[in-house]
Image 1 (cartoon, rainbow, N blue to C red):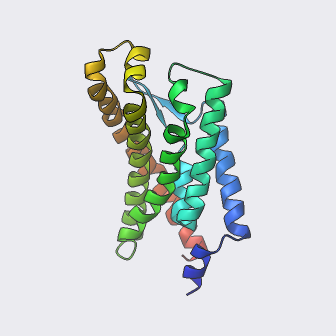
Image 2 (cartoon, one colour):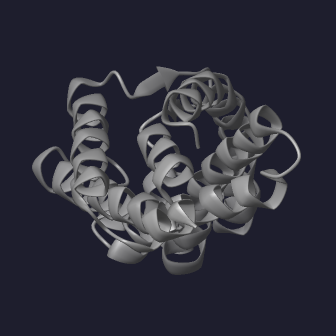
Length: 195
């Protein structure tokens, strides 16, 4: 009964978790520590605090951290523009998928939570990470396919192939990294909290 009540309330502990994990996301983004260079592009770990918050405190906390992550992404693209900033200034690209990360990570976790904590946390982490990658890239494709092709200097006919190729080459390593980082952290926190 107590566990159900804490998931529905947004109390002091939930606000503290949102503040702390949002701050970690901002530090990762502003220092460059949130990006892992890969041969094709940069993989991100900035969504990991969103996933941790969602699995520990529920979908509302996860969605709130995701909202702050998305708003910070807009701020970053306004203050430090790059080739794709035109897309990330749109909240449908930078905010909506990040809010969904928290929601999807929580429900990915809950789907298996009665069977095995470690497995369910790993599944939640993978689902949240893939939601970030495919959500952002799908919104770029749907809203900005032609501009993306022009910015990248590619044939517009190959835009879908390029974008979803990046989703696979970045998405899978990002999901693996998310599982490897999130699982031990969340399992340890859940032991301490007896959740």
